[in-house]
Length: 181
Image 1 (cartoon, rainbow, N blue to C red):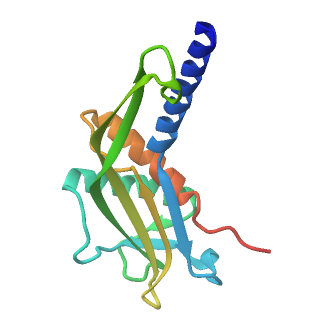
Image 2 (image 1 turned 60 degrees about the horizontal axis):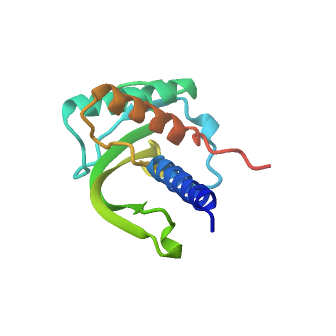
């Protein structure tokens, strides 16, 4: 095998690894709802607290609520302080840790053909934001969504806020759920 071909294969493998790491860092969003719920009847909401739920410090709490408030306003919902709200909205946040493996190769040939390879591990924080919506009349949940890799603390507060805004927009894109015909 020529050096040029080996270099091309190594460059291709590096590109694949880079793409995989970019997609691995993307936020994962999931949601669920009670089928048959008429979401068009919900016009107002009130913030409630999940007792015993995980919540960050006051500054991050305000940022999370502001991000959710702005997205719900885009959906036509109005925040109220009255118990007569149509929906009760609550959130929980948690930061857990996960192992991340970083692999790279040294030498002129890909690992598959006898080159030297190295793998290291590091611990990354995976932040999850969970948003719950309850019908105020029945006190039962009607919608729930979670976004992982959202509350990952970094040294850059602007980056943290941008990540949060992006995740909440992506999460609430699924509210209200699409109407099935």
